[in-house]
Structures are given as C-alpha cells and as structure tokens.
Image 1 (spheres, rainbow, N blue to C red):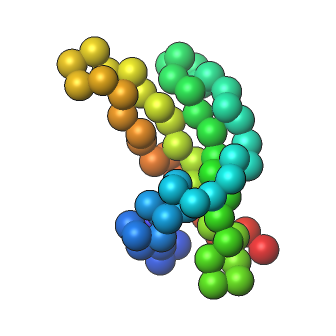
Image 2: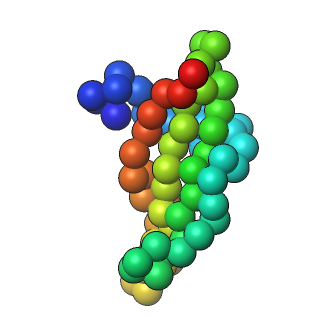
Length: 70
C-alpha cells in the first residue's frame, strides 16, 4: 500500500463499495481469493484479498495486494 500510495480508507472503501473483478477461486492453501475493483478519483483501485479460515477466531480477510488500473 505504501509503495502505491494507497491509504487504508481507500482500501476499505474499495472492499465495501467495489465490485468483483476476479474470482472467487481457491488458492494453493485452500483459501478463497478474489479481486475487488472500485473507481476512486477517476482511476480504478483493485484490491486482491484472501478469506482465511481461522479455527480460533473465525474468518479473516487478508489483503494480498493493491493496484491502480487505467
């Protein structure tokens, strides 16, 4: 996020308001992954996430990467 100058509020808005861009699919660890896309300030922000099943705490959403698209 720092490298691409993306803030936490931008990522959260993308996850809350965006639309599915890729997936869902299972990764090599058995977790579900997908990419969410959201238009922000004229550009599209894309957030790739994994849903990890954690027996102790339930499910967690893990941000894999973020990127801007044209």
